[in-house]
Image (cartoon, rainbow, N blue to C red):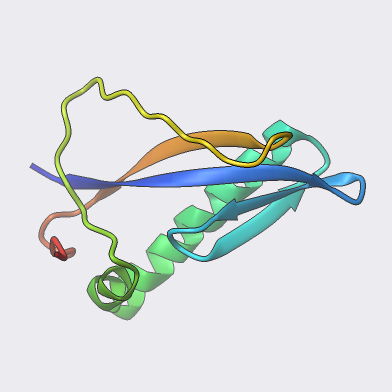
Length: 104
C-alpha cells in the first residue's frame, strides 16, 4: 500500500492579501482570498513534491525535516491550533512507498 504524508497549511491575513505556509516543507504562497491562498499553496506543494521526486532527493528532504510517510485509516481526526485570526487546513499527499522511505 502506498503511504501518505500529512501536511498542515496556515493562512494568515497580511497587508490586504492572505499569506499561506506549509511549515513541514518550507513552502509558501498567497492569494486574494483565504480559499485562493489554500489552492495556490496546494499547487505549490504539489510542484515541490514532484520536483523532489524527479531530482531523487525526496527521502533526504523528508529525513532533514523529520517527515515520516505513513499509512492511516480512512477517517482520522486532525486538530490544528495556531494564531487567532489565521485559517488552518490539513491535507494528505500520497507518497509512492517504493520511492519514499519512512524516516524515524
